[in-house]
Image: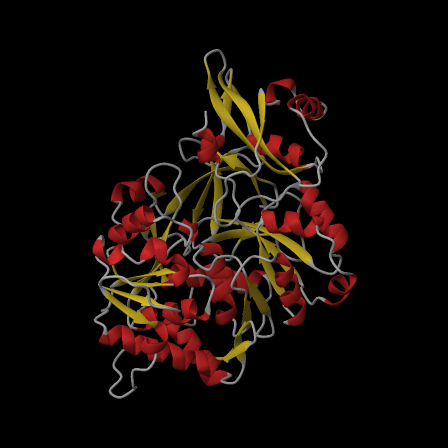
Length: 512
């Protein structure tokens, strides 16, 4: 595959040369053109270079959704540095581990997170911290972002010649056990995703994306932030997910055409009392869903409410940059995550890595330019995950005769009771059909007689009538075989979730 750019800086340079005055970023009342974005990136790149950041140095970002995130991201790449976007919901101890593991030299952060980040220079290799808003009282070298942008442009030698195979970003995965691992993504890895997305969605420079999910997440970073820049389009940045009504308002006012979300967002959207003028006058042509599977109930409700737009469900993982597959607009299949993106290959295999027949369940493996370079400083984990160029996803799925992929469950979530396979997602799908249930998670718990038994955790809709364990079991027995019905049902005010709304089953398993 021949890609049009060698690195991310070439993208914004090309956009500035081709369409200098076009607005690339809308944020609140501010508009930033292609040429203005380039100027700001160049200014911050000079600061990075004069501050001692060299090629291949790691710079960590712990920020909210903001323009400074984008400026930093492109500026770090311009000088040949490596970006480490970090979850902004962590605690100091977690930041300490990631920054030390990544060997990060500089941190860019916000006063919103100062309680967890201001002392990190004392316990990590961070030499300088840049604050996008206000300086805290803390020991070490601290700078304001606005002051960093004032370095004059004389004798500017800040640009490095990055090639497409160079390491660009390290994304730390949440991990199911132990510490998170850093997925190393090259420019080629991410460009392959951008190319595939542009082709699958038939995107043009007229398309406008909305960015409200956290920018540090691989799904948002590649598909919401970098993809609109890649196509020469634009993005609307929303600093905060709440209030949700503001996302709806900005989608309408800024004439968004591509809306990316996660199941939690779409579950809320189909239950919300949307104003008639939003349904009539919004310009969204594609709603894209990622992170975890949508329930059939949500899909059906969505298609009833939004008749002019397509809901395109996809699948991916950080280690694949992250998108692997998505439904094509001209032919969608309910409960399928679609077809692989261009030049990606997907197989369903057994324990011996041998391909199984169509419609049979096995582990999903992926090959192509999107597969990560490996895990940072963890060669054994890399060797266990990538075999002959194929990455083992840990997800169980099947493929139909037309090559459409269906996710059955996580391999680690499979429940084996008396030698019989039970797939939690199948049970969760039925639970989601109950309008009183907002979120559901089914896990396997060890049992002396059966090996494992299924247990359900439920989060109820605020306006729901009261459900009891007995009522839930009776409801499930009408739809599922008795051996699939959870032996226990627990109700929580809120299920533990990741930053993108995926239920943390690990946290639930720790309760048992």
